[in-house]
Image: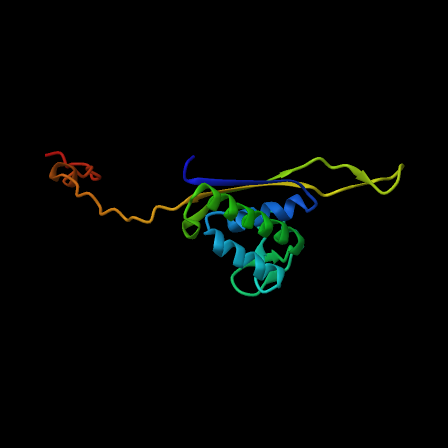
Length: 162
């Protein structure tokens, strides 16, 4: 993958559910746009729509539906995106045309904390982001040959018998 940059955050101390919703929120967007959106989430101006983990989650203003403002996870993903931009610059890619191809959140190891008997389990996540350089050229459509343009239409009505 010559035109791609990759970054991975391991054992991040954030909720996997929040990371999954953020991954769905930023996938397919340009990296600069994703960073500005997540900064707005930290400032509680834009909500991350929760599609899967949305039980008892209130609807947010605008056309978001159920959503939340996962600030801690957003800060972690912003730092990963900035690292992704640095990786892309190191590879010689055009940073302005980077588009997030995949964003994956996975459950990490969950060690126990606070005491010996009834312990709580920490929230930890792995987060991977892959960005690909977009094609800036728009190729004109190739015209179809005459044979392909004129196709036979299927007969929907039964022919009457005489």
